[in-house]
Length: 377
Image 1: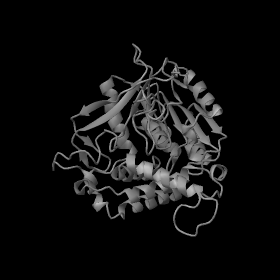
Image 2: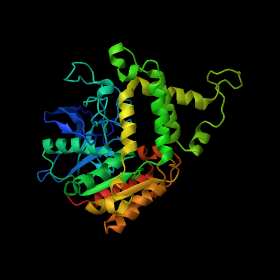
Image 3: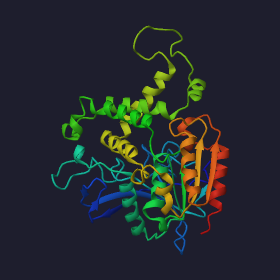
Image 4: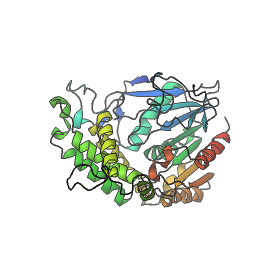
């Protein structure tokens, strides 16, 4: 039976920008493409548009499905949130999902041809920041004729982009939904990212980032990076509940092959990710995470950094998320309140750790729906 709340069959679109983009690093990207999808209808006043920013391993495919024969297998990563009657209701909002610059799902990135050499960029693709992503998204906004977003939203790294929108162009984002995010990474988070990057860069198939030219893929490194990352996305309680110390074969076999169910799960997730993602993109995205720190230019004073924001804010965290703990969301909320901004905060009980923002926990979706319903179009 067809899910009548789904946005249904969707197809990506591509926007080409020929003007150079000067990056925060000082590097210049001579033109670029962004792949995006849209759901719902833009109203006559162009006042109902919502930009959804993706997290580290996400992309433009936020909702709906690509293959009608396999709607569940090809569903968007936030399909439970976007659709008719869902918290981000496409009967009310025009929703845009975009694959970030540097991505590996169609937008210009390391796999793209470098016009200076005629070969894939590979390791020559410049490092990017959250600020660069928002600058590129602004150009897409202009192309779509959206002067102001009703809201910009995202989870994790996507939440950082939503926050950056309110700082880079305060007049163009009326609301920001910052979910399971942080104003900057902790030293521990940077450490996890560096371990993941070293796993990729030390893979013999990496070839200094130019593995495309060698017909190679640093699968082992990317697999290890994902396994490390996946551990941090789950809570200890969830791991214990789902896997405990269950043995794959019911007994110890005294070898280095898979013995515990958690080992099997992590290897499966690593293999699946290595088949679908690009190692250079992973390196770029984790560095963008590390670099994000709006308070850096203000001597570490987050309230001073957020003083130029004008948006209304919805901030949410999850009790078992130890990678982006609720305390990090509290920092954002306190800094916003110091500036007299309107802030709604929800701390959600959920056992799933950082990945909670992808689930349809009732309290979480009710809080989101309530805030989004309150947005005046």
